[in-house]
Image (cartoon, rainbow, N blue to C red; front, side):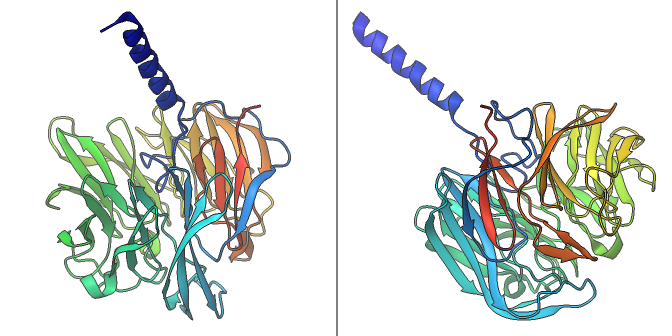
Length: 439
């Protein structure tokens, strides 16, 4: 090979490596690329201004489901219908309408394609789909409120397959609908379904055909599945209204199980891992830390929470970092607790619940380096440093108006996506894109 040709080859490879290393992160599913709420991009603002300026905003229908961002596209789902949308925790609202899956250009917000299907709601809190789309290569997977699971072509929006969990597995629509964010791993799709012998299911992601199904669960709960590696095995971790258990992803066979019974069957958050400890918490001051065995695929309870220990969220999964857990409890209290013991390092009501009409609150937390972006149900985006020693706010600004209601307060219950140095957030009226790049 000539010297000139070799120089061009090396230069081309170096340029390719530079392009790959400089490529912006995607946010292709619930809680980001690895479902841990960590945003790895650099060059992000270190303080928030008093006002956030939208790069673009586009109208969308109702929905709790956060957007997914991948390959220069934004995927967001919504519901359109006419009826009474007033949330009542104890009863269901019957509303005829349709669910919409939208694909938008991430740079401009312009619609690329739209896929619609009829969906008649019979749920409490009827303001739209709950589950964030999951993008995997040239396919996007979406779970609707009434159990419609749809696979679409990313480029064209054409339907690849669609199944109805109620018809496929005999699952009942829970009072707050189907909410388990789809998990794609290898050639399979995992989610909580419900029904006799089908509480958790694994499907062939290419066809939607059932690979395996396990667990008798009248109510499957609302939590997504997750994958961990421990004890020499890959494990599918499942949180139900009755237990947290680890399973063989290939067969569904159980490795271990620990009791976990949230109030009102509200298993919503998926267990988060720090080292050899998993933690999951829920309504009713119900939380458990689980120690994973390093030698074999077993686990045991490490500690169980009390009113003064642990973290008990509703919507937002707590974020672990370096042995501590940061999350928002049902009453709006932001807490830091020791993952090994559950002991509270500090707590603060002001960031989320301060000044609210009722002492309640929820927020979604995303870590970026040593700082945290907190999307409060108030519609504010907060930037803060959190350590075991203290909470330090670095600024807050209005991101979106809280268009929902709950218990006498206005709420925004949708997890934003963080990608390409931007935040993408939606409410029941619009989706916005705001730059968070450092200037």
